[in-house]
Length: 80
Image 1 (tube, one colour):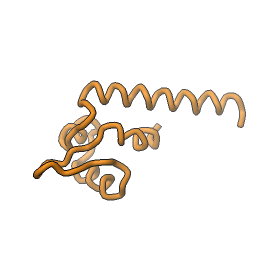
Image 2 (tube, one colour):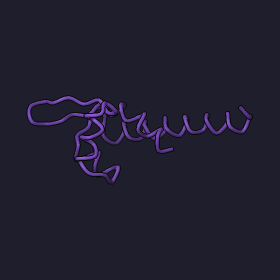
Image 3 (cartoon, rainbow, N blue to C red):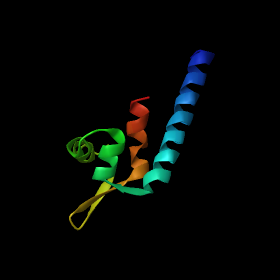
Image 4 (spheres, rainbow, N blue to C red):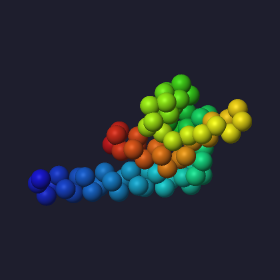
């Protein structure tokens, strides 16, 4: 691996960490589908699909679906 590639990888990880920290500050450790859909400009269906695939950790609390916000880290890293 070339030095520039190592720096780029490190910067991507730092960026994803920073994005995650900002997201947690905004919505908290747990979030709901509506908040995430609004923040990421995607549909609730897309989020549910990622939950079903195991990409996002979530659980039901009555009729509500609660998402563990930090479980979005891998999704964020995919798009960087």
